[in-house]
Image (cartoon, rainbow, N blue to C red; front, side, top):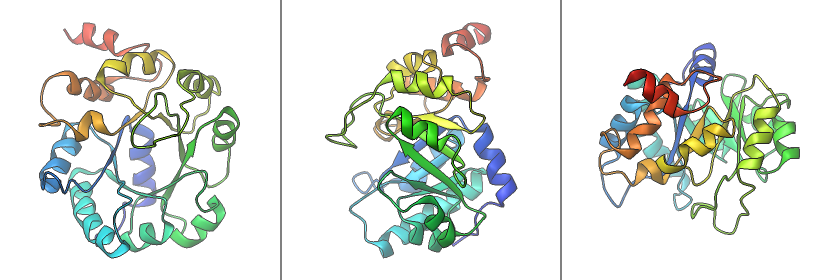
Length: 236
């Protein structure tokens, strides 16, 4: 397993990150290496393997493929929920839900160099994650109901607006049901970083021109720019 990205370099990638992808192992398409190369070369900064059906040994084997792709492209590998797997995989990032290990316990397992992210679903959780010691970034949402989290209420764009109003310098991402058609709404609410799932995993050619390519405009979107449309006009 390749070693993780050095801590300072990983923090730099995180600070500049705009697009975070969660994907399963793509067993139904059998194209994982090609898919990862396409999205990582096309604008994805962080990629997370999220597949609850995997046993730990199989997950580690697949994470080797993810790690190799991330090293080739200078991007970050994230592991969801499990600090033990993140440690064994030498992952750059461990992402924790509200019901997962407490941050201090996870940090003790993975060491000081890996980054830790946090899911937040309420104003109180977002405010806490913005200042909590040991948290390097947080995600807020879901913006819309999503089949990847069935039954979870969606706090919607008001929570994104709240996170933006916090004025934190800690990186944060909007998440949940975001696709190309909804991207401007999320940006207008104040987000400058987004997590996507189906918007890219269901693309035939993730880096190709078309509606999904709008996500890659985020690479040219400086903080404070009100919407993707203004970037499109400048580059037209």
